Image (tube, rainbow, N blue to C red; front, side, top):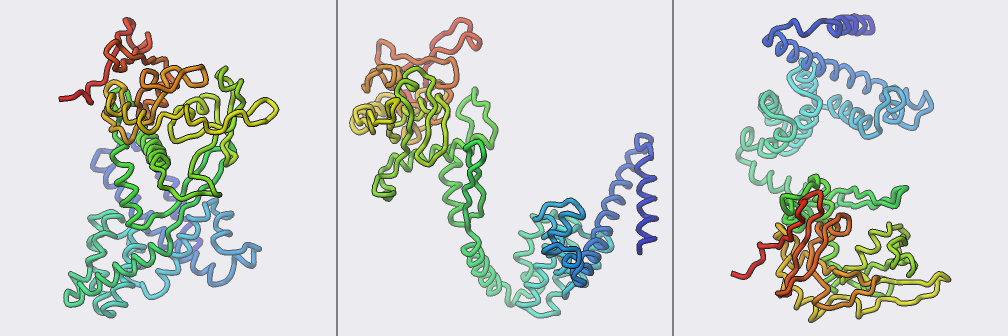
Length: 416
Protein backbone atom coordinates (compact mmCIF):
# COMPACT_ATOMS: atom_id res chain seq x y z
CA UNK A 1 0.00 0.00 0.00
CA UNK A 2 2.86 2.38 0.77
CA UNK A 3 4.16 2.08 -2.79
CA UNK A 4 0.73 2.67 -4.31
CA UNK A 5 0.10 5.71 -2.12
CA UNK A 6 3.51 7.14 -3.04
CA UNK A 7 2.67 6.71 -6.73
CA UNK A 8 -0.69 8.39 -6.19
CA UNK A 9 1.05 11.26 -4.40
CA UNK A 10 3.42 11.71 -7.35
CA UNK A 11 0.49 11.75 -9.78
CA UNK A 12 -1.37 14.36 -7.70
CA UNK A 13 1.80 16.46 -7.46
CA UNK A 14 2.04 16.38 -11.25
CA UNK A 15 -1.57 17.59 -11.47
CA UNK A 16 -0.76 20.48 -9.13
CA UNK A 17 1.80 21.73 -11.66
CA UNK A 18 -0.68 21.62 -14.55
CA UNK A 19 -1.69 24.94 -16.10
CA UNK A 20 -5.39 24.69 -15.36
CA UNK A 21 -6.12 27.98 -17.13
CA UNK A 22 -5.75 26.09 -20.41
CA UNK A 23 -8.58 23.67 -19.60
CA UNK A 24 -12.05 24.12 -21.01
CA UNK A 25 -14.99 24.62 -18.68
CA UNK A 26 -16.08 21.01 -19.21
CA UNK A 27 -12.59 19.77 -18.41
CA UNK A 28 -12.46 21.91 -15.26
CA UNK A 29 -15.75 20.49 -14.01
CA UNK A 30 -14.68 16.91 -14.81
CA UNK A 31 -11.35 17.44 -13.05
CA UNK A 32 -13.14 18.87 -9.99
CA UNK A 33 -15.48 15.86 -9.82
CA UNK A 34 -12.54 13.47 -10.10
CA UNK A 35 -10.49 15.31 -7.46
CA UNK A 36 -13.47 15.21 -5.09
CA UNK A 37 -13.99 11.50 -5.68
CA UNK A 38 -10.30 10.76 -5.09
CA UNK A 39 -10.45 12.79 -1.88
CA UNK A 40 -13.27 10.59 -0.52
CA UNK A 41 -11.53 7.36 -1.58
CA UNK A 42 -8.37 8.53 0.15
CA UNK A 43 -10.49 9.31 3.22
CA UNK A 44 -11.58 5.67 3.27
CA UNK A 45 -7.95 4.54 3.19
CA UNK A 46 -7.06 7.05 5.92
CA UNK A 47 -9.84 5.79 8.19
CA UNK A 48 -8.76 2.18 7.67
CA UNK A 49 -5.19 3.09 8.63
CA UNK A 50 -6.40 4.95 11.74
CA UNK A 51 -8.54 2.00 12.78
CA UNK A 52 -5.61 -0.40 12.45
CA UNK A 53 -3.31 1.91 14.40
CA UNK A 54 -5.97 2.20 17.08
CA UNK A 55 -6.28 -1.56 17.28
CA UNK A 56 -2.54 -2.04 17.63
CA UNK A 57 -2.23 0.52 20.41
CA UNK A 58 0.33 2.53 18.47
CA UNK A 59 -0.54 5.77 20.28
CA UNK A 60 0.22 4.26 23.68
CA UNK A 61 3.46 2.76 22.39
CA UNK A 62 4.52 6.23 21.22
CA UNK A 63 3.75 7.73 24.61
CA UNK A 64 0.43 9.42 23.75
CA UNK A 65 -2.61 9.12 26.01
CA UNK A 66 -4.96 8.27 23.12
CA UNK A 67 -5.04 7.85 19.37
CA UNK A 68 -6.75 11.24 19.04
CA UNK A 69 -3.90 12.94 20.92
CA UNK A 70 -1.35 11.07 18.81
CA UNK A 71 -3.11 12.17 15.58
CA UNK A 72 -3.15 15.76 16.79
CA UNK A 73 0.63 15.73 17.07
CA UNK A 74 1.28 13.59 14.02
CA UNK A 75 -1.10 15.28 11.58
CA UNK A 76 -1.35 18.68 13.32
CA UNK A 77 -5.10 18.40 13.82
CA UNK A 78 -7.33 19.80 16.50
CA UNK A 79 -8.43 17.31 19.15
CA UNK A 80 -12.11 17.46 18.05
CA UNK A 81 -11.12 16.74 14.43
CA UNK A 82 -8.88 13.88 15.51
CA UNK A 83 -11.61 12.38 17.70
CA UNK A 84 -14.11 12.52 14.83
CA UNK A 85 -11.68 10.54 12.66
CA UNK A 86 -11.13 7.92 15.35
CA UNK A 87 -14.87 7.60 16.05
CA UNK A 88 -15.83 7.35 12.38
CA UNK A 89 -13.09 4.79 11.74
CA UNK A 90 -14.54 2.65 14.54
CA UNK A 91 -18.12 3.05 13.30
CA UNK A 92 -17.24 2.01 9.74
CA UNK A 93 -15.20 -0.94 11.01
CA UNK A 94 -18.00 -2.49 13.04
CA UNK A 95 -20.99 -3.68 11.10
CA UNK A 96 -21.07 -1.07 8.34
CA UNK A 97 -19.28 -2.64 5.35
CA UNK A 98 -21.77 -1.12 2.92
CA UNK A 99 -21.07 2.42 4.14
CA UNK A 100 -17.33 1.74 4.06
CA UNK A 101 -17.56 0.49 0.47
CA UNK A 102 -19.62 3.52 -0.61
CA UNK A 103 -16.93 5.81 0.80
CA UNK A 104 -14.14 3.73 -0.75
CA UNK A 105 -15.76 4.09 -4.18
CA UNK A 106 -16.14 7.85 -3.78
CA UNK A 107 -19.95 7.77 -3.78
CA UNK A 108 -20.29 9.58 -0.43
CA UNK A 109 -18.25 11.98 1.69
CA UNK A 110 -16.95 11.38 5.20
CA UNK A 111 -19.66 13.63 6.66
CA UNK A 112 -22.33 11.74 4.75
CA UNK A 113 -20.77 8.44 5.85
CA UNK A 114 -21.27 9.44 9.49
CA UNK A 115 -24.94 10.26 8.88
CA UNK A 116 -25.55 7.04 6.94
CA UNK A 117 -23.75 4.84 9.47
CA UNK A 118 -25.73 6.33 12.36
CA UNK A 119 -29.00 5.88 10.46
CA UNK A 120 -28.26 2.32 9.36
CA UNK A 121 -27.44 1.36 12.95
CA UNK A 122 -30.73 2.88 14.12
CA UNK A 123 -32.72 1.05 11.44
CA UNK A 124 -30.97 -2.24 12.23
CA UNK A 125 -31.98 -1.91 15.89
CA UNK A 126 -35.56 -0.89 15.11
CA UNK A 127 -36.40 -3.06 12.10
CA UNK A 128 -33.71 -5.68 11.62
CA UNK A 129 -30.88 -6.34 9.14
CA UNK A 130 -33.03 -6.56 6.01
CA UNK A 131 -34.47 -3.09 6.53
CA UNK A 132 -30.96 -1.82 7.38
CA UNK A 133 -29.67 -3.09 4.01
CA UNK A 134 -32.55 -1.37 2.22
CA UNK A 135 -31.90 1.88 4.07
CA UNK A 136 -28.25 1.81 3.02
CA UNK A 137 -29.20 1.79 -0.65
CA UNK A 138 -31.72 4.60 -0.22
CA UNK A 139 -29.32 6.76 1.79
CA UNK A 140 -26.42 6.31 -0.63
CA UNK A 141 -28.75 7.34 -3.46
CA UNK A 142 -29.86 10.40 -1.47
CA UNK A 143 -26.22 11.24 -0.74
CA UNK A 144 -25.75 11.87 -4.45
CA UNK A 145 -28.28 14.71 -4.18
CA UNK A 146 -28.13 16.14 -0.66
CA UNK A 147 -25.48 17.57 1.66
CA UNK A 148 -24.90 16.00 5.11
CA UNK A 149 -27.21 18.40 6.95
CA UNK A 150 -30.19 17.78 4.69
CA UNK A 151 -29.34 14.09 4.50
CA UNK A 152 -29.59 13.83 8.29
CA UNK A 153 -32.97 15.56 8.25
CA UNK A 154 -34.24 13.18 5.58
CA UNK A 155 -32.84 10.17 7.41
CA UNK A 156 -35.18 10.76 10.35
CA UNK A 157 -38.02 9.38 8.18
CA UNK A 158 -36.08 6.60 6.47
CA UNK A 159 -38.39 3.96 7.97
CA UNK A 160 -41.24 5.40 5.91
CA UNK A 161 -39.37 4.01 2.90
CA UNK A 162 -37.97 0.73 4.21
CA UNK A 163 -40.32 -0.32 7.05
CA UNK A 164 -43.52 1.77 6.89
CA UNK A 165 -45.41 -0.56 9.27
CA UNK A 166 -43.26 0.50 12.24
CA UNK A 167 -42.27 3.99 11.08
CA UNK A 168 -44.58 6.00 13.35
CA UNK A 169 -43.74 4.06 16.50
CA UNK A 170 -40.02 4.18 15.71
CA UNK A 171 -40.20 7.93 15.01
CA UNK A 172 -41.81 8.51 18.40
CA UNK A 173 -39.18 6.38 20.10
CA UNK A 174 -36.40 8.21 18.25
CA UNK A 175 -37.87 11.57 19.29
CA UNK A 176 -37.95 10.45 22.92
CA UNK A 177 -34.35 9.24 22.67
CA UNK A 178 -33.28 12.53 21.10
CA UNK A 179 -35.01 14.47 23.89
CA UNK A 180 -33.18 12.40 26.49
CA UNK A 181 -29.86 13.02 24.74
CA UNK A 182 -30.60 16.73 24.53
CA UNK A 183 -31.41 16.86 28.24
CA UNK A 184 -28.26 14.95 29.08
CA UNK A 185 -25.96 16.99 26.82
CA UNK A 186 -27.32 20.48 27.58
CA UNK A 187 -24.69 22.81 29.00
CA UNK A 188 -23.44 26.38 28.95
CA UNK A 189 -19.84 27.36 29.62
CA UNK A 190 -18.86 30.94 30.52
CA UNK A 191 -15.09 31.44 30.20
CA UNK A 192 -13.24 34.61 31.14
CA UNK A 193 -10.70 35.69 28.52
CA UNK A 194 -7.45 37.49 29.29
CA UNK A 195 -8.94 40.89 28.35
CA UNK A 196 -11.95 40.49 30.70
CA UNK A 197 -14.36 39.54 27.95
CA UNK A 198 -16.43 36.38 28.22
CA UNK A 199 -16.65 33.50 25.79
CA UNK A 200 -19.98 31.66 25.71
CA UNK A 201 -20.07 28.09 24.44
CA UNK A 202 -22.68 25.44 24.91
CA UNK A 203 -25.47 23.28 23.56
CA UNK A 204 -29.13 24.15 24.15
CA UNK A 205 -31.95 21.65 24.17
CA UNK A 206 -34.79 22.22 21.71
CA UNK A 207 -37.07 23.97 24.18
CA UNK A 208 -34.39 26.39 25.37
CA UNK A 209 -33.28 27.00 21.80
CA UNK A 210 -36.84 27.98 20.94
CA UNK A 211 -37.00 30.33 23.92
CA UNK A 212 -33.70 31.96 22.97
CA UNK A 213 -34.78 32.43 19.37
CA UNK A 214 -38.11 33.87 20.42
CA UNK A 215 -36.35 36.31 22.76
CA UNK A 216 -33.51 37.56 20.57
CA UNK A 217 -34.74 37.19 16.97
CA UNK A 218 -37.00 40.28 17.13
CA UNK A 219 -33.99 42.26 18.35
CA UNK A 220 -31.55 40.96 15.74
CA UNK A 221 -32.90 42.95 12.80
CA UNK A 222 -31.02 46.13 11.83
CA UNK A 223 -32.39 49.00 13.89
CA UNK A 224 -32.34 51.42 10.98
CA UNK A 225 -30.46 52.49 7.85
CA UNK A 226 -27.48 53.65 9.95
CA UNK A 227 -27.04 50.26 11.65
CA UNK A 228 -23.64 48.97 10.51
CA UNK A 229 -23.43 46.04 12.95
CA UNK A 230 -22.69 42.56 11.66
CA UNK A 231 -25.27 39.80 12.27
CA UNK A 232 -23.05 38.42 15.04
CA UNK A 233 -22.83 41.82 16.70
CA UNK A 234 -26.61 42.23 16.49
CA UNK A 235 -27.12 38.84 18.17
CA UNK A 236 -24.65 39.86 20.88
CA UNK A 237 -26.50 43.13 21.50
CA UNK A 238 -29.87 41.32 21.47
CA UNK A 239 -28.66 39.00 24.23
CA UNK A 240 -27.53 42.07 26.18
CA UNK A 241 -30.97 43.64 25.77
CA UNK A 242 -32.69 40.46 26.99
CA UNK A 243 -30.48 40.40 30.09
CA UNK A 244 -31.25 44.06 30.81
CA UNK A 245 -34.96 43.38 30.46
CA UNK A 246 -34.73 40.42 32.85
CA UNK A 247 -32.91 42.55 35.43
CA UNK A 248 -35.46 45.31 35.03
CA UNK A 249 -38.40 43.03 35.87
CA UNK A 250 -37.28 42.59 39.46
CA UNK A 251 -38.50 39.00 39.33
CA UNK A 252 -35.10 37.28 39.35
CA UNK A 253 -34.23 35.37 42.54
CA UNK A 254 -31.94 36.98 45.08
CA UNK A 255 -28.24 36.33 44.78
CA UNK A 256 -26.16 36.36 47.96
CA UNK A 257 -29.02 37.99 49.84
CA UNK A 258 -29.30 40.93 47.42
CA UNK A 259 -31.63 41.52 44.47
CA UNK A 260 -30.16 40.59 41.10
CA UNK A 261 -28.23 43.65 39.98
CA UNK A 262 -25.01 44.86 38.42
CA UNK A 263 -22.68 46.84 40.71
CA UNK A 264 -20.09 49.09 39.09
CA UNK A 265 -17.23 50.30 41.26
CA UNK A 266 -15.35 53.43 40.19
CA UNK A 267 -13.78 56.54 41.64
CA UNK A 268 -16.06 59.55 41.84
CA UNK A 269 -13.47 61.93 40.39
CA UNK A 270 -12.79 59.60 37.50
CA UNK A 271 -16.48 59.30 36.73
CA UNK A 272 -17.22 63.02 36.61
CA UNK A 273 -14.03 63.73 34.61
CA UNK A 274 -14.94 61.03 32.04
CA UNK A 275 -11.63 59.29 32.74
CA UNK A 276 -12.29 56.65 35.35
CA UNK A 277 -12.43 52.99 34.46
CA UNK A 278 -14.47 50.69 36.64
CA UNK A 279 -14.91 47.14 37.81
CA UNK A 280 -17.93 44.92 38.14
CA UNK A 281 -18.47 42.93 41.30
CA UNK A 282 -17.62 39.85 39.19
CA UNK A 283 -14.06 41.14 38.78
CA UNK A 284 -14.39 42.19 35.13
CA UNK A 285 -13.00 45.60 34.22
CA UNK A 286 -14.81 48.29 32.22
CA UNK A 287 -13.66 51.32 30.28
CA UNK A 288 -14.64 54.80 31.43
CA UNK A 289 -17.08 55.03 28.53
CA UNK A 290 -18.77 51.77 29.52
CA UNK A 291 -19.05 52.93 33.12
CA UNK A 292 -20.80 56.14 32.11
CA UNK A 293 -23.12 54.31 29.74
CA UNK A 294 -24.08 51.72 32.36
CA UNK A 295 -24.73 54.49 34.86
CA UNK A 296 -27.68 55.57 32.71
CA UNK A 297 -29.53 52.29 33.07
CA UNK A 298 -32.38 52.26 35.55
CA UNK A 299 -31.67 48.61 36.40
CA UNK A 300 -28.04 49.18 37.37
CA UNK A 301 -26.95 50.66 40.69
CA UNK A 302 -23.71 52.61 41.00
CA UNK A 303 -21.30 52.00 43.88
CA UNK A 304 -19.19 55.16 44.00
CA UNK A 305 -16.07 55.16 46.23
CA UNK A 306 -13.76 57.93 47.38
CA UNK A 307 -10.07 57.88 46.57
CA UNK A 308 -9.47 56.10 49.87
CA UNK A 309 -11.97 53.41 48.94
CA UNK A 310 -14.68 54.59 51.34
CA UNK A 311 -18.27 54.31 50.03
CA UNK A 312 -19.70 57.69 49.11
CA UNK A 313 -22.95 56.44 47.62
CA UNK A 314 -24.34 52.96 47.04
CA UNK A 315 -27.31 52.90 44.72
CA UNK A 316 -28.69 56.42 44.99
CA UNK A 317 -32.29 55.71 44.12
CA UNK A 318 -33.00 59.32 43.27
CA UNK A 319 -30.69 58.93 40.26
CA UNK A 320 -32.68 56.04 38.82
CA UNK A 321 -35.34 56.66 36.23
CA UNK A 322 -37.94 54.18 37.43
CA UNK A 323 -41.51 53.87 38.58
CA UNK A 324 -43.83 56.77 37.66
CA UNK A 325 -40.98 58.70 36.01
CA UNK A 326 -40.21 55.84 33.63
CA UNK A 327 -43.89 55.41 32.86
CA UNK A 328 -44.12 59.09 31.98
CA UNK A 329 -41.04 58.73 29.77
CA UNK A 330 -42.64 55.76 27.97
CA UNK A 331 -45.84 57.75 27.43
CA UNK A 332 -43.83 60.59 25.90
CA UNK A 333 -41.32 58.72 23.71
CA UNK A 334 -43.35 55.50 23.12
CA UNK A 335 -40.16 53.59 22.26
CA UNK A 336 -36.59 54.30 21.23
CA UNK A 337 -36.50 57.98 20.34
CA UNK A 338 -33.50 57.75 17.99
CA UNK A 339 -34.47 58.62 14.40
CA UNK A 340 -35.45 55.59 12.35
CA UNK A 341 -35.66 53.11 15.24
CA UNK A 342 -38.81 51.09 15.92
CA UNK A 343 -37.76 49.34 19.15
CA UNK A 344 -40.64 49.24 21.69
CA UNK A 345 -40.38 50.64 25.23
CA UNK A 346 -39.73 47.30 26.93
CA UNK A 347 -36.42 47.02 25.06
CA UNK A 348 -35.31 50.52 25.96
CA UNK A 349 -33.22 52.17 28.64
CA UNK A 350 -33.53 55.66 30.11
CA UNK A 351 -30.63 57.94 29.17
CA UNK A 352 -29.74 61.14 31.06
CA UNK A 353 -29.37 63.90 28.46
CA UNK A 354 -27.03 65.73 30.82
CA UNK A 355 -25.19 62.96 32.57
CA UNK A 356 -26.02 62.40 36.20
CA UNK A 357 -22.30 62.53 37.12
CA UNK A 358 -22.10 65.95 35.44
CA UNK A 359 -24.85 67.34 37.61
CA UNK A 360 -27.81 66.40 35.46
CA UNK A 361 -31.00 65.84 37.39
CA UNK A 362 -33.32 62.87 37.23
CA UNK A 363 -36.39 64.33 35.57
CA UNK A 364 -38.55 63.96 32.50
CA UNK A 365 -36.92 67.03 30.94
CA UNK A 366 -33.46 65.45 31.25
CA UNK A 367 -34.25 61.96 30.00
CA UNK A 368 -34.79 60.16 26.71
CA UNK A 369 -35.72 56.57 25.95
CA UNK A 370 -33.15 54.63 23.86
CA UNK A 371 -32.74 51.01 22.81
CA UNK A 372 -29.50 49.28 23.77
CA UNK A 373 -27.89 49.78 20.36
CA UNK A 374 -28.67 53.49 20.12
CA UNK A 375 -27.76 54.04 23.76
CA UNK A 376 -24.29 52.70 22.99
CA UNK A 377 -24.22 54.62 19.72
CA UNK A 378 -25.03 57.92 21.40
CA UNK A 379 -22.25 57.42 23.96
CA UNK A 380 -19.70 56.51 21.28
CA UNK A 381 -20.58 59.02 18.55
CA UNK A 382 -20.89 62.76 18.03
CA UNK A 383 -24.69 62.73 17.92
CA UNK A 384 -26.37 64.96 20.50
CA UNK A 385 -29.91 64.95 21.86
CA UNK A 386 -32.04 67.74 23.26
CA UNK A 387 -35.66 68.43 24.09
CA UNK A 388 -37.54 70.90 21.91
CA UNK A 389 -40.14 73.45 22.87
CA UNK A 390 -42.94 70.90 22.57
CA UNK A 391 -41.16 68.64 25.08
CA UNK A 392 -40.12 65.92 22.63
CA UNK A 393 -36.55 64.81 21.89
CA UNK A 394 -34.69 65.58 18.71
CA UNK A 395 -31.24 64.43 17.64
CA UNK A 396 -28.54 66.51 15.97
CA UNK A 397 -26.24 64.51 13.66
CA UNK A 398 -22.49 65.09 13.57
CA UNK A 399 -21.16 67.50 10.96
CA UNK A 400 -19.42 64.77 8.96
CA UNK A 401 -22.79 63.08 8.45
CA UNK A 402 -24.83 66.23 7.83
CA UNK A 403 -22.87 69.47 7.32
CA UNK A 404 -26.02 71.47 8.06
CA UNK A 405 -26.67 69.40 11.21
CA UNK A 406 -30.42 69.52 10.78
CA UNK A 407 -32.20 68.05 13.83
CA UNK A 408 -34.00 64.75 13.31
CA UNK A 409 -36.89 63.09 15.10
CA UNK A 410 -38.24 59.57 15.34
CA UNK A 411 -41.50 59.23 13.41
CA UNK A 412 -42.17 55.53 14.08
CA UNK A 413 -43.82 56.19 17.42
CA UNK A 414 -46.01 59.16 16.49
CA UNK A 415 -49.55 58.96 17.77
CA UNK A 416 -52.05 58.16 15.07
